[in-house]
Amino acid sequence: MDKQTYERYRLILERELIPATGCTEPIALAYAAALARDLLGGSPQRIDVFVSGSIIKNAKSVTVPNTGGLKGIEAAVAAGVVIGQADKLLEVLSAGDSGCRARIESFLSDCPIQVHLAQGDELFDILLEFSGGGSRSRVRITGSHTNVVLLEKDGCVQFEKQPADSAQENNAPPMGIAEILEFAQTCSLEDVRPIIERQIECNAALSQAGLTGEWGAQIGKTLLQAGWNDVLLRARARAAAASDARMGGCELPAVINSGSGNQGVTITLPVLEYAEALGASREQTIRALVLANLAAIRIKQEIGCLSAYCGAVCAGCAAGAGVAYLHMADRSLIEHTIVNGLAILSGTICDGAKPSCAAKIAMAVEAGILGFHMAQSGREFVHGEGIVKKGIENTLHEVGELGREGMAETNRVILNIMLKQQEGT
Image 1 (cartoon, one colour):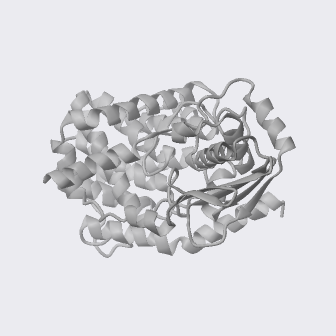
Image 2 (cartoon, rainbow, N blue to C red):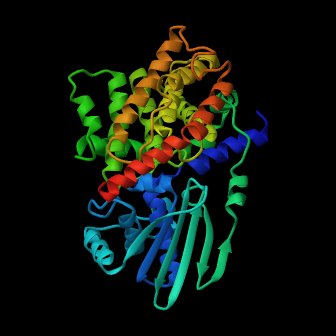
Image 3 (tube, rainbow, N blue to C red):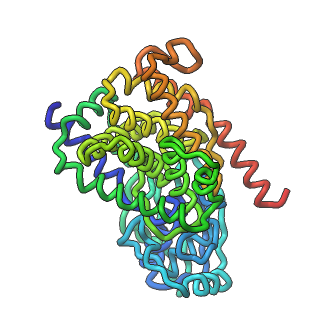
């Protein structure tokens, strides 16, 4: 692998696999709120929130950490104002304490927060306008969770870049699964170990919290209480339990993938469970996770950051590829694992972040592992069967078109349903 490609893949891991405390969409709102408060120079007296539909969808029903169980956009913004530390980025709410809920509720009662649906085509768009003390601040984040494109106070722009510039920055050519596997097999462990070890530590701790606490829908616990116990069930349960904890407001951070903590834990926990069952070395485990993480990012490159296509499916198939690697699979078997998994579960909808995400994660992991067992037995879905095309890169392109374009109307219908629920109709 040439040095430029090698460094690109290393930087992708470094940029994508970062810690986040709580579901990333409400946390992005809290981050924007902390920035707007600092820019204003004090607590606001009125807040207007302009967000794209996908932000509404993913922030509406999830518990915001360190708020004592509060949910939704208003809670996330209020938490960012009251306890947010903007320099911590997606760990902006990590410094909460037992008195946070009372302070946040007091702020919510004193400061009106009006939520508006943003106009425009940006799938990921947050604009906050703060007013107070005779001043006004505006902060906009577009394209990804920490991509600030506007900082403005009293009409004076302090920082600005166009959303199109941000899109251009992220418009790198797609990675290839063959190159990803080569990087995973040959990269220097010292270049990736700190990134992957942090992911292992954070996501394993979050899973343990989900299995021992009473978070979310308790899908992980439910799986383990089913009465049978094998490595596949444990892999599903551990991944689901981490999501239980995240969706339930657990204060422990997840190391994310493709902007999503749920995708990060879906990748990590099954690979760890199979590594333990197989007696894999630490080096094998790290390399398997390098492969799985980059494979998930590759799939999401085609689909985009937010859509109606459930990201857990991408992550579950990528986890299957990591498990295949632990079984000493060659490139062909790994590619067939990914294609099989995508053929099984593509089309699963994303209807926002909430407790049921944990159940979808359990199913996605099962599909990814089933895809591996099919490939291991010489069975595969082939060209012409549904969305499957000849060659993995062609299949990934079709999956991306399905998620990005085919499910765009689905995304709008889902949002309309959720808005009707919010209005009580």
